[in-house]
Length: 192
Image (cartoon, helix red, strand yellow):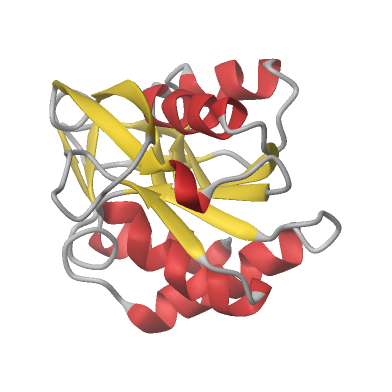
């Protein structure tokens, strides 16, 4: 998605340790006009599959998932990173290691919101090593539901996550795939 790539080039900051900082428009401060275009693009990319729910993980994926859900006319379910007094009843749970935060989270979704009839589109802001996606996929499968596809805003193509997910036979569409980054020069190259 050219618009997203241009924004990453303009406002993205490459930091040591393969970190791409895009918090000025994607995952701290959110550019809703950009999210709207991303939502339209996800709808275009996945218009050929059945989707009755969008799933993401808190917190950075929620904004993108909600905007995209408007185009699919479906609800968004998000996996929570902590047990809450508001979640009653049984839950699906898994452990996810965060690349950015360098920690392991227990992630849960109430069993009330996933069923074997669900056709899930998973949407998230970043794909690096694929741990978050693996966890979400495990939760969808535990519910007996189907993963209709996976939509990612920014994939780090030089890390293993994208290849790992695609090798499972799952449909993965990333709006921007970063092929390489240089924290010394700030250069970002995209896969086309």
